[in-house]
Image 1: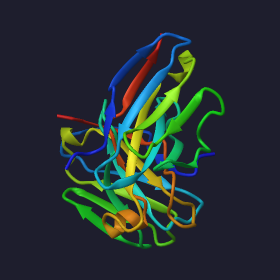
Image 2: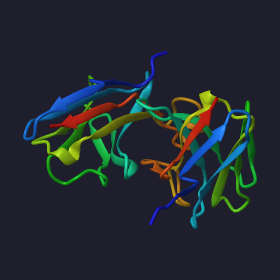
Image 3: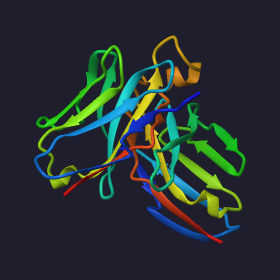
Image 4: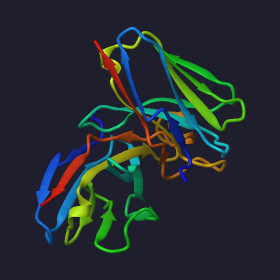
Length: 122
Length: 114
Protein backbone atom coordinates (compact mmCIF):
# COMPACT_ATOMS: atom_id res chain seq x y z
CA UNK A 1 0.00 0.00 0.00
CA UNK A 2 1.86 3.06 -1.26
CA UNK A 3 2.23 6.00 1.05
CA UNK A 4 1.99 9.67 0.18
CA UNK A 5 4.14 10.44 -2.84
CA UNK A 6 5.69 13.76 -3.67
CA UNK A 7 7.72 14.84 -6.63
CA UNK A 8 10.14 16.12 -7.34
CA UNK A 9 12.14 15.45 -4.18
CA UNK A 10 14.47 18.32 -4.98
CA UNK A 11 13.73 21.36 -7.12
CA UNK A 12 16.07 24.20 -8.01
CA UNK A 13 14.67 27.39 -9.49
CA UNK A 14 16.06 30.82 -10.27
CA UNK A 15 14.35 33.90 -8.93
CA UNK A 16 11.29 34.76 -11.01
CA UNK A 17 10.65 31.23 -12.25
CA UNK A 18 7.68 29.06 -11.37
CA UNK A 19 7.77 26.03 -9.09
CA UNK A 20 5.23 23.19 -9.31
CA UNK A 21 5.14 20.65 -6.53
CA UNK A 22 3.07 17.50 -6.87
CA UNK A 23 1.47 15.27 -4.26
CA UNK A 24 -0.38 11.98 -4.65
CA UNK A 25 -2.25 11.07 -1.45
CA UNK A 26 -2.44 7.60 0.04
CA UNK A 27 -4.92 5.30 -1.65
CA UNK A 28 -8.40 5.97 -0.33
CA UNK A 29 -7.52 9.38 1.12
CA UNK A 30 -9.49 12.33 -0.16
CA UNK A 31 -8.04 15.08 2.05
CA UNK A 32 -4.73 16.74 1.25
CA UNK A 33 -2.74 19.25 3.27
CA UNK A 34 0.36 21.25 2.39
CA UNK A 35 2.91 22.39 4.97
CA UNK A 36 6.14 24.37 4.72
CA UNK A 37 9.15 23.79 6.94
CA UNK A 38 11.80 26.41 7.53
CA UNK A 39 14.63 25.80 10.03
CA UNK A 40 13.77 28.87 12.06
CA UNK A 41 9.99 28.51 11.87
CA UNK A 42 9.20 24.84 12.15
CA UNK A 43 6.42 23.08 10.26
CA UNK A 44 3.62 25.47 9.27
CA UNK A 45 0.24 24.74 7.69
CA UNK A 46 -0.42 26.29 4.30
CA UNK A 47 -3.61 24.87 2.74
CA UNK A 48 -6.18 22.09 3.13
CA UNK A 49 -7.97 20.67 0.09
CA UNK A 50 -10.51 18.04 -0.75
CA UNK A 51 -11.18 16.90 -4.28
CA UNK A 52 -11.85 20.02 -6.38
CA UNK A 53 -12.31 22.21 -3.29
CA UNK A 54 -10.09 24.41 -1.15
CA UNK A 55 -11.30 24.02 2.43
CA UNK A 56 -8.83 26.20 4.34
CA UNK A 57 -6.10 28.37 2.82
CA UNK A 58 -5.45 30.48 5.90
CA UNK A 59 -1.74 29.62 5.92
CA UNK A 60 -1.09 30.36 2.28
CA UNK A 61 0.58 33.65 1.27
CA UNK A 62 -1.95 35.81 -0.57
CA UNK A 63 0.24 36.35 -3.60
CA UNK A 64 2.16 34.00 -5.88
CA UNK A 65 0.97 30.81 -4.16
CA UNK A 66 -1.91 28.62 -5.32
CA UNK A 67 -3.01 25.04 -4.79
CA UNK A 68 -5.41 22.66 -6.45
CA UNK A 69 -6.60 19.08 -6.05
CA UNK A 70 -8.39 18.13 -9.27
CA UNK A 71 -10.88 15.32 -9.64
CA UNK A 72 -8.24 13.28 -11.43
CA UNK A 73 -4.53 13.45 -10.74
CA UNK A 74 -2.29 14.74 -7.99
CA UNK A 75 -2.59 17.84 -5.88
CA UNK A 76 -0.41 20.69 -7.13
CA UNK A 77 1.17 23.49 -5.11
CA UNK A 78 2.23 26.25 -7.47
CA UNK A 79 4.57 29.08 -6.61
CA UNK A 80 4.90 31.82 -9.22
CA UNK A 81 7.84 34.20 -9.52
CA UNK A 82 9.81 32.48 -6.79
CA UNK A 83 12.03 34.47 -4.44
CA UNK A 84 14.89 33.32 -2.23
CA UNK A 85 12.60 33.36 0.79
CA UNK A 86 10.53 30.58 -0.78
CA UNK A 87 13.43 28.16 -0.29
CA UNK A 88 12.14 25.53 2.13
CA UNK A 89 10.96 21.96 2.44
CA UNK A 90 7.33 21.56 1.36
CA UNK A 91 5.42 18.60 2.74
CA UNK A 92 2.15 17.15 1.65
CA UNK A 93 -0.01 15.07 3.99
CA UNK A 94 -3.22 13.15 3.44
CA UNK A 95 -5.98 11.79 5.61
CA UNK A 96 -9.05 9.66 5.04
CA UNK A 97 -12.34 11.37 4.37
CA UNK A 98 -15.36 10.79 6.59
CA UNK A 99 -16.50 7.21 6.33
CA UNK A 100 -13.12 5.93 5.18
CA UNK A 101 -10.06 4.63 6.99
CA UNK A 102 -9.53 3.74 10.63
CA UNK A 103 -12.04 5.30 13.00
CA UNK A 104 -9.23 6.92 14.96
CA UNK A 105 -7.65 8.40 11.85
CA UNK A 106 -10.97 9.89 10.84
CA UNK A 107 -11.87 11.18 14.28
CA UNK A 108 -8.56 12.75 15.24
CA UNK A 109 -7.37 13.89 11.85
CA UNK A 110 -4.29 11.69 11.77
CA UNK A 111 -2.31 12.81 8.77
CA UNK A 112 0.28 10.84 6.85
CA UNK A 113 3.14 12.78 5.35
CA UNK A 114 5.09 12.43 2.15
CA UNK A 115 8.89 12.71 1.94
CA UNK A 116 8.74 16.37 0.94
CA UNK A 117 10.05 18.53 -1.88
CA UNK A 118 13.10 20.61 -1.08
CA UNK A 119 12.91 23.84 -3.05
CA UNK A 120 16.04 25.89 -3.51
CA UNK A 121 15.76 29.30 -5.14
CA UNK A 122 19.01 30.66 -6.53
CA UNK B 1 3.21 32.91 20.89
CA UNK B 2 3.34 29.20 20.18
CA UNK B 3 0.19 27.18 20.79
CA UNK B 4 2.38 24.18 21.62
CA UNK B 5 5.64 24.71 23.50
CA UNK B 6 8.12 21.87 23.31
CA UNK B 7 11.09 21.41 25.58
CA UNK B 8 13.93 20.97 25.48
CA UNK B 9 14.72 22.29 22.00
CA UNK B 10 17.90 20.22 21.79
CA UNK B 11 18.87 17.04 23.57
CA UNK B 12 22.20 15.25 23.15
CA UNK B 13 22.66 12.02 25.10
CA UNK B 14 24.63 8.78 25.15
CA UNK B 15 23.25 5.45 24.04
CA UNK B 16 21.46 3.70 26.88
CA UNK B 17 20.29 6.84 28.68
CA UNK B 18 16.65 7.69 29.33
CA UNK B 19 15.04 10.97 28.28
CA UNK B 20 11.76 12.85 28.40
CA UNK B 21 10.44 15.41 25.94
CA UNK B 22 7.60 17.74 26.88
CA UNK B 23 4.79 19.41 24.95
CA UNK B 24 2.87 22.07 26.88
CA UNK B 25 0.06 24.49 26.21
CA UNK B 26 -2.44 26.70 28.01
CA UNK B 27 -5.18 25.34 25.73
CA UNK B 28 -7.20 22.14 26.09
CA UNK B 29 -7.06 19.60 23.26
CA UNK B 30 -9.36 16.73 22.39
CA UNK B 31 -6.37 14.92 20.90
CA UNK B 32 -2.65 15.33 20.47
CA UNK B 33 -0.24 13.57 18.15
CA UNK B 34 3.47 12.85 18.25
CA UNK B 35 5.55 12.62 15.10
CA UNK B 36 9.20 11.75 14.47
CA UNK B 37 11.07 13.22 11.53
CA UNK B 38 14.45 12.08 10.24
CA UNK B 39 16.69 14.38 8.17
CA UNK B 40 15.54 14.59 4.58
CA UNK B 41 12.23 12.83 5.26
CA UNK B 42 8.69 13.72 6.20
CA UNK B 43 7.22 13.39 9.72
CA UNK B 44 6.04 9.92 10.67
CA UNK B 45 3.10 9.56 13.03
CA UNK B 46 4.04 7.73 16.24
CA UNK B 47 0.88 7.96 18.34
CA UNK B 48 -2.35 9.85 18.99
CA UNK B 49 -3.44 10.43 22.60
CA UNK B 50 -7.05 11.34 23.25
CA UNK B 51 -8.01 10.72 26.89
CA UNK B 52 -6.80 12.79 29.85
CA UNK B 53 -4.28 10.77 31.85
CA UNK B 54 -3.84 8.27 29.03
CA UNK B 55 -0.56 6.38 28.74
CA UNK B 56 0.44 4.64 25.52
CA UNK B 57 3.53 2.52 24.98
CA UNK B 58 5.32 1.87 21.72
CA UNK B 59 8.27 -0.43 22.46
CA UNK B 60 10.74 1.79 24.36
CA UNK B 61 8.60 4.91 23.90
CA UNK B 62 5.98 5.91 26.48
CA UNK B 63 3.51 8.70 25.70
CA UNK B 64 1.39 10.39 28.32
CA UNK B 65 -1.48 12.86 27.96
CA UNK B 66 -1.99 15.17 30.93
CA UNK B 67 -5.11 14.83 33.05
CA UNK B 68 -6.30 18.26 31.93
CA UNK B 69 -5.46 17.48 28.28
CA UNK B 70 -3.20 20.54 28.05
CA UNK B 71 0.16 18.79 27.94
CA UNK B 72 1.87 15.61 26.90
CA UNK B 73 5.21 13.90 27.36
CA UNK B 74 7.29 11.38 25.48
CA UNK B 75 9.69 9.22 27.46
CA UNK B 76 12.32 7.06 25.77
CA UNK B 77 13.97 4.29 27.73
CA UNK B 78 17.50 3.12 26.89
CA UNK B 79 17.87 5.41 23.90
CA UNK B 80 19.58 4.09 20.79
CA UNK B 81 21.29 5.94 17.93
CA UNK B 82 18.33 5.00 15.74
CA UNK B 83 16.13 7.21 17.94
CA UNK B 84 17.97 10.27 16.65
CA UNK B 85 15.61 12.71 14.97
CA UNK B 86 13.21 15.61 15.37
CA UNK B 87 10.27 14.87 17.65
CA UNK B 88 7.17 16.96 17.05
CA UNK B 89 3.90 17.24 18.91
CA UNK B 90 0.86 18.45 17.00
CA UNK B 91 -2.83 19.04 17.40
CA UNK B 92 -5.70 19.40 14.98
CA UNK B 93 -7.69 21.59 17.35
CA UNK B 94 -7.58 23.81 20.40
CA UNK B 95 -10.57 22.44 22.25
CA UNK B 96 -12.89 22.16 19.27
CA UNK B 97 -13.69 19.42 16.83
CA UNK B 98 -10.74 17.71 15.22
CA UNK B 99 -10.52 18.74 11.61
CA UNK B 100 -8.31 20.50 9.15
CA UNK B 101 -4.84 21.77 9.78
CA UNK B 102 -2.33 20.47 12.26
CA UNK B 103 -0.52 22.96 14.45
CA UNK B 104 2.96 21.79 15.40
CA UNK B 105 5.29 22.56 18.24
CA UNK B 106 8.79 23.75 17.40
CA UNK B 107 10.14 20.27 17.99
CA UNK B 108 12.90 18.65 20.00
CA UNK B 109 16.05 17.65 18.14
CA UNK B 110 17.35 14.47 19.76
CA UNK B 111 20.85 13.14 19.11
CA UNK B 112 21.85 9.80 20.59
CA UNK B 113 25.57 9.12 20.49
CA UNK B 114 26.86 5.54 20.28
